[in-house]
Each structure stands twice: as structure tokens, then as C-alpha cells.
Amino acid sequence: MDILFASSEAHPLIKTGGLADVSGSLPRTLKNSRQEVRLIMPAYPQAIAAAGALQCVAELTLPVARTPVRILLGRLPNSRVRLYLVDAPEYFDRPGGPYGEPGGTDWPDNAARFALFARAVCELAMDRAGLNWRPDLVHCNDWQTGLVPALLASEAQRPATLFTIHNLSYQGLFDRAEVAGLGLPDSWWSMHELEFHGRISYLKGGLVFADWLSTVSPTYAKEIRSAEFGCGLHGLLTHRRDRLTGILNGVDYRDWNPGRDRLIPFTYTARTLRLKQENKIALQNAFELPSRPDIPVFGHVGRLVEQKGLGLILDLIPELLQRPMQLVILGTGQPELEQALRAAHTAHRSKIGVRIAYDEGLAHLVEAGSDTFLMPSLFEPCGLNQLYSLRYGTPPIVRRTGGLADSVVDANGPNLYAQTATGFVFNEPEPDQLLHAIDRALNLYAQQRVWKDLVQTGMQQDFSWEQSAKVYVDLYQQILDLRIREAGMRRTASNPF
Ligand code: ADP
Ligand code: GLC
Image 1: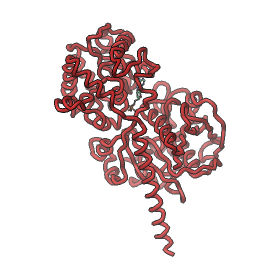
Image 2 (image 1 turned 30 degrees about the horizontal axis):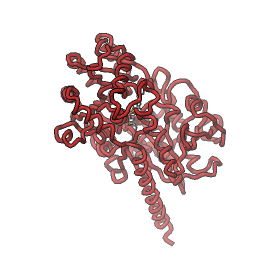
Image 3 (image 1 turned 30 degrees about the vertical axis):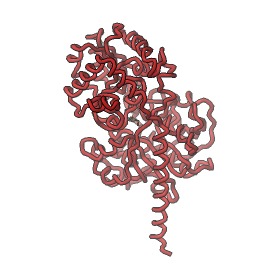
Image 4 (image 1 turned 180 degrees about the vertical axis):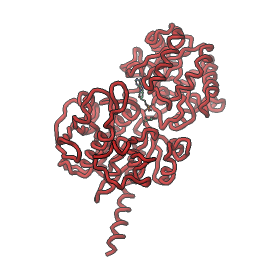
């Protein structure tokens, strides 16, 4: 199959979260399974710098863009995947992140930036860029690519489209004034198309128009059909439930493997766990905590946003201070959460280590050096850190939601006895439920033999991308078959002879 994979970030070119991990690994794994998959992203300066050799292979004249948009061809690093970078300096060549200014505020022209990106993706998808390649299917990801299925819907002879929801709470909502002049069809301003409470939703472009929808875990695919998780879109998602599939993300064990990890001081395996202890000392040093091999370290890495359940952790700080444990947190995000964490660190330096930063190396050290990983997310479409922590022998403590529910087996009596337990799972996002899970972890940690079994069971779990990639290939095929059937039916209906 020929697949065009469209994403707004991909590791190691540019990353703000798990979307980049997926967009860097899934295409590479698909390519290794002999699918012709090509990745397309905006040409941010970081991506250009990280991509290595690039050559301009096309120039597109797009509505609204003042100058021709160049298509740069290279390779996704460490892979055989062809990479297309959409080079429109007016939109993408600026310091800061893919979506916002260096300080974090969204770019004021995001509506225009991702409309332009979508138009460029469509030109390639329709083989109008002179590249002599026509994908069978365009795989779009999150709101930044939501206009692609919507634009393609009006094309005759178009490729099939799959839209993957990585996070329903980011919707790409824009006011009329922001999209005025972008040449978007007027018909989109209807609640049956892209309108969402008086604004335009790029996400809805994908949800309404893609041939098929997917989410990054089976449980999230169910949850988003409810009012609690549906972000106001549960009606639409329920309507489309026959074309909504959940596929759990995988892990790139080339990057996340404690036996080979170049970013940690001591590599280790399930058989050399004493070396994990050395990483723990290194972690305590890095966070300026007392070196105490006997005290369990609870780690957390992530975007500091409400979704991740940091409010629960902050609420519990007085309780946690009374327990024999240390807490380390690495992240950046909402200023009020950063501020609250900094304050907790300042007041309790011997028990709470905090680093407000985006630091790849330190993220690996937190996985390797912590004894357990805290991920009490309010919702979690998939979550990758709990998968990483399983492999690093760092049993995760998670809420039973989304991909967390699909990947962590609770350390209750029967599961421990059956040696299937891998972490600690609680149901409701309430501080006392999280505290109870933490206490259960402290309890088991004190029983070193049971703890070691838990750690080793987690390390043996296989969440490699190969498995999920096979499911994607089957889904792509199913969508192509459906598209062929539907196109045939339309021909028959309009031209019965
Ligand atoms: P999300 O995509 O919602 O942010 P995931 O768990 O899927 O959550 O993925 C988060 C990814 O981003 C992981 O690879 C994690 O290590 C990385 N990450 C998040 N915050 C930081 C940080 N402050 N420093 C380094 N890596 C981070
Ligand atoms: C989103 C979700 C996260 C998921 C990631 C990659 O950012 O918040 O749960 O793992 O996308 O799919």
C-alpha cells in the first residue's frame, strides 16, 4: 500500500508530546513491513536542522500563500521513510514551538498555518505536486491535519482517509475572523460539518469527513462516546461508532530500552536490577535529594496540564510528606502548575525534587531511576510514559482510563498470585483513591520479593510497534476495500447504465 502519513510533529525532528513519538515510530515500522509510507510535516526550523540532507522537489502555488510553497524531500532520521517538509517560511520559519511562541502562547495565525499545511498535503495526496506518486490512503493525525479529509472529500478519485484522534481535548477551534480570507468553503459553517458552537473546528473536519476514525487505545474509543470524555463531540462520535477503531500505541524499544539506553548512566536488564539502584542514586543527585537507596522514589514526567492529574498529586503533598518516600517531577506547561510545583519543592527540598524543563535525557533518567511512576491522568488517550516505565522496571500507578486501563494490570491479590500484575490501578480521580494506590505500592515495596516479581513481569511486557503496525495495515486495507465498494456504489447510483 502507498500511505501518506500527515503529522504536525515527529521525533526526532520536533516534539511536544506523544504524537511525535507515534509519528516517528509508526511510519518507520510500517516501512519495515514493506508498506510504502511517506511522512509529511511542516518545515519548522528545528525539523530542517534535524533532518539532514534535503532537496527541493516541488513548488506549489496555493490559495492565500503569497509565495510558492516548496516541498523538501529528505529522510526521517534512522529510517528508510521518505520525509516531505512543507516549506512556507512565512508560516513555519520562526523561533518557538510548532504551535506557539517561545513563552507558550499559541501563534495567532495557527488557523492559517494549518490550513496551508492541509492544502499542501492534499496537493501531494492528489498527485498534483509533480512527484508522480499517488497514495492509496492519507493517514491524518489530530486537529492540525483535520482539514485534509474535509478538503479531499470534494475531490473525485481521491485517496481514502483515516483520521487518528490522539487527544480530543485539542480541537483547533477558530473564530470567523481568524479563518476569513483563508478560502475555506462556506458550507463548512454548519453544525453538520465543521461548525462547533459558532466557531470552526479543524478537528471536526477529520471527525465528519474521514472515511474512518481511530483512537490510540480501545478504551478511549469507547470513552469518547460518553458525555464525560466526549468534549461535546460524543454525539457525533456515537453516530460514527461503526467506523471508529481503537489501536493501542506501541513503544520504540530502540529508544526506550534500559539495556541499551545511552541517555542513562547505568544500563540494566531484569537480571541486573542492582544497576537500576545506581540510576536511582544518579536521579537523587540530579534532583538534589538525599541519596537514600532504601527510600522509594515516585517519578513523574509530562506536560504540566490538568489532563495529567497533577492537581491530585498537589492535593496529596501534605500526606506524602508523612510517608517514607521521595517525589521527582519533570515537566513544563501551565504556569500555575509550574508555580505550585516550584513552591512545593522550595518548601520541602529533602523530599520533593522538581525540574521545570523539557529534557529528554532527564526523562530517561526519571524512568530508570524511579521505583514507581505516577500517572494519575484524568483521561489518557493512550499514554506512553506508563509503557516506558513498565520496560524500565518502574511499576506505574495509574487511573483506570484510556490507554492506561489497556496497558497496566493491577497488583491485586489474584493478579499478584497469577504473576500478571504490572502496576497499581485506581478508578476515580479522587485524591484518596490515588493515596490508597500509593500506600499499596509502599506496602509492596517493603516486601522485596513480591516487588521484584512485579517489576520483572512489567519488564517482560511487549508493547512493540510491530504488533500495532499490523493492526493498522489491516485497518488500512479494510478502509480501501470500503472506499472501493462505496465509489462503485456511487457510480452505479448516478449512472445506472
Ligand atoms: P502526551 O502526548 O499527552 O504528552 P504521552 O505519555 O503520550 O503524553 O507522551 C509524552 C511524551 O513526551 C513522552 O515521550 C515523554 O517522555 C515526553 N515528555 C513530556 N514532557 C517531557 C519533559 N518535560 N521532558 C522530556 N520529555 C517529556
Ligand atoms: C496524546 C495523548 C496521549 C497519547 C499521545 C500519542 O498526546 O494525550 O495519551 O499517548 O497523544 O498518541
